Length: 355
Image 1: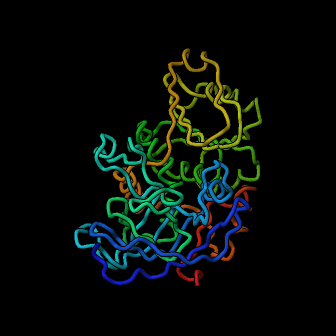
Image 2: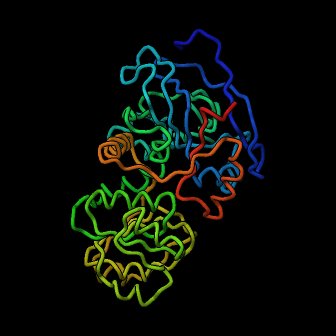
Image 3: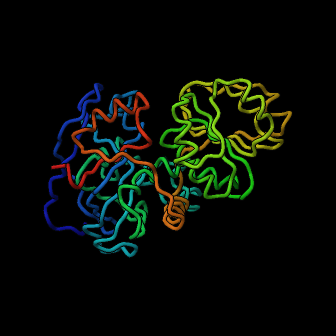
């Protein structure tokens, strides 16, 4: 270990039980290792994963649980072997903080698919055997491989949601070559992930159609986010009118919904990417086979594509639509997130409100 000084107390907000209620909590981070970066957290995005694990929806939550995996901040200390970062650099941390670093996926820079399992940023088991704690906290210690450079001209509050919401849609869009101007993209659901898919689609030069169950989102979809068309998902006539018109669909909806009507909107050999988690995926084999269509799943992304996305956003002035909140509002924010009452991502101002 590099750091000979006593590990300072870390202040965070944690859930103590499946009620998910967050309150102040003091704990210690692991000592700084030779390959580690210690980051003063300035901002943390609020993701639905925070709801899932604070409330033990998967039955594996380890309390006290400090959520948050859309982290942005500033380097405050580096280990002796660290060469990519220096004190004062703006950096980000996403959904995982470690992996085996030896399997074929780690070697290809897609550590999120590590054969031995990537270590989640919170509610995972760290290399020292302790439970990882996330970004609703004052600082974090992370191996430099899992830290990302944030360009100096890019606001840290805007950078935070890129580390989960942004990369979750950017990674499969790049994998399936959606960055071809003139093609057509459908985006199902207009929340944290969906609004980023729209922004990337427009930056790629695509004709973007938004499908949403909420007519109230029409004006913002068209005028704020720049979508070309808005369709109310329940309007069967509108859907039929778009038959075989889309090259790609990115489905960000986690609520249960039929798949066949959307599959019919894809052109021959069109690509349907699912990034949401409905309780089941069900469609007719004919929807797939008769149109030579491709259905693909995705989660977040590896370190290589994540850094690429951050740089792309900075170069093309792409910023998430955010509502900055104090840490004291975190419980209300999670309740509003459940009700889908956010446009389009909460970001906690850790630096100025976590005291």
